Length: 174
View 1 (cartoon, rainbow, N blue to C red):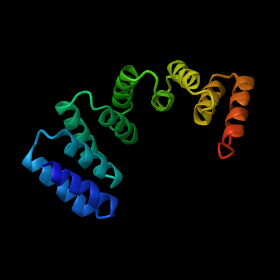
View 2 (view 1 turned 60 degrees about the vertical axis):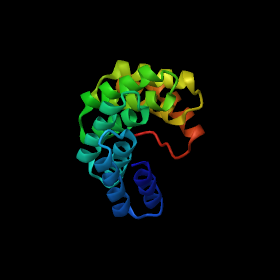
View 3 (view 1 turned 90 degrees about the horizontal axis):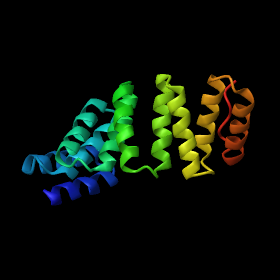
């Protein structure tokens, strides 16, 4: 099973997606409780655009190994992409509970909250991301979005300026 999983990873890196998926599927067939093979099958599905299969594989990974943080992170991202914001917030909250020092995940959770219209919790996540990683351009930008939506135009403009200084590709919305 480990050999099949490793073969799948190798084939994936070489660009043989079908061969990789076949190897992951064979690893799962040999050992249905092998969490890493389910995780890798989920990554393959997500990168191929099959979000339903990806979500299923990440859930199976977590059922087998509940502390598999990367599976929870990817499940939250898949749920967000599928429009299941409640599910994405639930999984994202679990991630930040397990790793409260993970600025990027706080930013992602903040984006999902912002997308759902929960502005105050989103603002808190962006502020926490910036406390953890002060030069985090994307978190400055996202905080600017929240501040803009809540009518705090001067504070919003200041966050957009900081974000743009840190990353010139981040252009404030008009």
